[in-house]
Length: 548
Image (cartoon, rainbow, N blue to C red; front, side, top):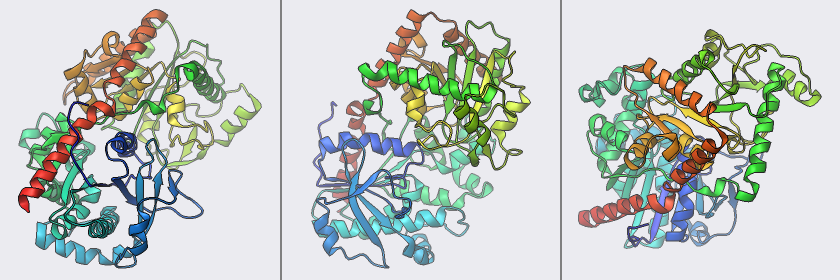
């Protein structure tokens, strides 16, 4: 870390994913926490939603005695808001306030009116999760207000809000606590994601898009309006990559003050002494499930490949992954390929016939031998339909098999019963050919485990590799393939060739590539990337001081 630490009395960060593992933002916060604790021991407080019950408690939160106890005993929270305080059970064990925000739903209409008057946030066409986000972030802001008044408003306090879901909270703090410095981080613009998700070309026509106009066209007015207001009113607006900064400048009409790339911690990677045994165990589990499903025996040197992430068929490049792997069927390969798609969908249940086959060590192929868990909407599931359309049969004659795992790998899915990282270590390569990817934790996680990865120039991580390293396996463990709006087939060919090159590599070559991958991951440690956040803290505090 090169940048000198900024003096802060309280650093409060609010996100829907605090102690609530949903997506990449959880990884950002949970891996960043250890470094923040080193810098601001127990001055760093995370605020998240209390969506848990006694029957389904958060596996990440422990309610215990903390320095927050004095505040909590005298807290004066309105509207029936309640809180629990404790520790987030991650490296660094930071302070956490979980907020029960259910009473705030009744206040949403008044909140919407206030935000229109103060900041021109247009909530008229709100739908879906907008009301939930408003209720939570409003309650979180009231908690922040009470904490700040308890500690004294003359202190150096930063309130950091992540994603549009917390925008209402930032605006409330801006209106009621003018001495508190605010930071707003968008991890992906809501309208940019929507443009891509609706099949529109984002990059060739970006300079021609107007965010407000597109929000009206795509029925995204409320979220876009809130996100734009939060970005413009924050004391410091940040995003996670240069590619998203350009998107913000066009669609939100403001350039982020700082780009804060997402770091990673090696805590999740087994030690050298345990690494090979963990890898062997993962490969055994992956091939056992594949064998029970297909009725085939897989050789020990089978090349195991995977993609993973959120279930966004086009944005995450799941379409491109499948088309690329399909091309491998006509490629000369040294080893058979077993490709896993680890993407949660509308899962119904683990397949009982697969569970029985695993328990009984059966060797007969099951019906529909490409999927491990039944989904509720098989006729509408785009991944499953594409697997069938492309002719993946996983029969005895196939050299390239594809297996779809449409569930969260949280340790109790009913088939693998282990977490994602415990399977990732068993891969020979990963592919993340994203079309819309503001950062891209999945390829970074992959190289942290020494697993070479393929990504595209449209991901923030891919752009970082292009700017800081050499985008080839031998140098960085990463192959970055240039992707645009009009070169889909070319990219599919290049991904297929990249995977084939790994499949045909010698053991010493693969060892060197794995070493290069781990070296790349070490450069993305939070000890290096935290300096960008420190810069954001400095900007926010200075702007708040100037305002006051």
